[in-house]
Amino acid sequence: MEHKQEIINTRVGGLGSSDAKMVVGIAERGNLNYADKERIAVMLGLAERRQISSKAIELGNIIEDAVFEVLKTQFGENITSNPRYEIQLYLDYRVSNHIDFEISTPDELIWIEHKSTIHGINQALEDYKYQLAWHTMLGEDKALNEGKKFRLMLSHYDTNGFDGEFNADKLNIVEVKPNKHYIDKIGKGLLIINEVLSTFTWQPNEGILHASSLPAEINDKCEMMATHLRKIKELTEQVDAFKQRMCELMVANNVKSIVTDAFTIILTEQSVSTTFDKSKFAKEHP
Image (cartoon, rainbow, N blue to C red):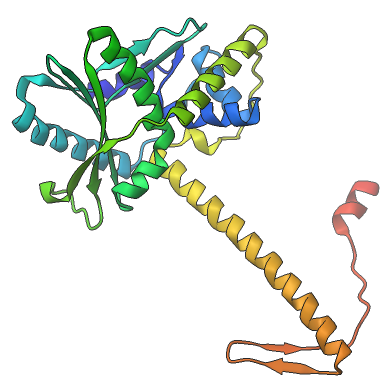
C-alpha cells in the first residue's frame, strides 16, 4: 500500500479530501477551532501528524485492493488506483486529492471513491458528502482541462459479517450527483484558511488528541457517540420538564402518586439537605 504512505506525506504542504469536513466546518463557523489549528500546523510543518492504525483500516485496505481487481476485469488498462490530482486555486498551500480509482477514456473521466462500512451505501453517501463534494470540485477541474465529461461514483462494500474473505456480491456502486452548495462552502473555508496563514502560530496542548486526528473509522464512531450523548441530553431535559409539570399537577389536585405500566410517580415532601463542597474548600484553604 505504497500509495497510502504517499497520501500521508502530502498532508504537509497542503490539504486533501479527508480535510473536506474540517474545511466546511471552518466555512460555517468563520474561524478555526483547536483541531483545525492542529491540522494547519501539520500542513505548515509545525507539528507532526500522529498516525494511528487499527484492524479496521487494515481490513479496509484489503477490501480496496480486492475491489480494484474486480474493476480491472471490466476496465482493463483504463483504470488506475489512487492517482493524485492538484487543483490550481492560487492559494498559499496545495489543494489536492487521491481518488481511490480513476477510469480515463477518450470522452470521460470517471472517479470512484470507495468506502467499506456496515451501514449501507445510502448512509455512506451522507457520511462522506463533504469528501465527495471535494472530489467533484477537483474532478470537474481535471476533466475540463482534458476536454472530457466528468462522473463521480461511490463504491461501497458491506462489511457486516466480514471474515476476511472478499465477496463481490456485497459490492455496490452508485453515481454521485454534484452538490454545488457544499463545493461553495469548501471554497469559502479554503479562503478563510488562506487568510489566517500569514499570522498563524501554533502552541500545542500536550497530551490532548482531537478525534479528527484518529483514523476515519474511529472518528466516525466518536461522532456517533457524540450524537447519542446529545440525544440523551435532549431526552433528559424532556423528562425533567415532564416531572416539573406532573409535580405541579399532583400538588394542585392533592395526588400522592400516579402509576403507569412503565413507571410510578411519587410526590414526596419537601426537605432541606446540606452538602460540603470539598473542591471549593481545597481551593480556598490549600
